Length: 241
Image (tube, rainbow, N blue to C red):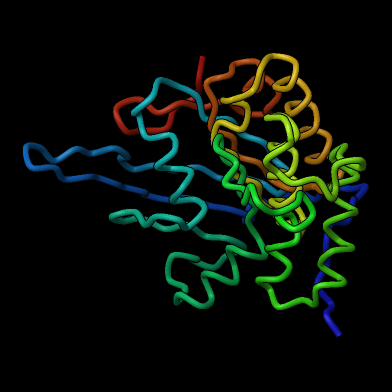
């Protein structure tokens, strides 16, 4: 019997200073003409349930840092300690399991499969975990209803609006009740009305689920919703003024 906890609201958020600790992250890239240091000695803590936005101009390393936090990329050096374990030392199987169960991703370009229905896209993380199709579908329907897509559950993604597609992406990211949500320009392709709705939805889900959230954005209205706002200057993380 699968005892995995799927989407489940919570009434309390317990902060934990040892929840996520990022220390000494460096990242550089080499081209034929230059060696470019993008991140230099990045250090910060993120408590359980805490929200943080990363703002600033394109090309300063915001998305690079987010991808490293999500273990989609590796730093040149440094540690990411999650509940006192350095996740960068995990082998590939353990890292894939951690990423599937503990981190939800939302991107500007939704990365949905347009030929499949909203429910089919949403249930994929549960199927990847190895859960049966019936339970996966039930969990997907529940979270799709929560994000306001009750009447679009069986609609193909290709016929959904941009705002609806982003809601499907959010539902997919949250179906396994991750402890951390990482969002990269989640409203970058949306108009003002849909952007505001997504802003409100993300903050509601943060409160309900007690998940920590790191959001990369150019949208200062969205950034203002977060408890902390930081930027990257000369490769280093600083509080945004």
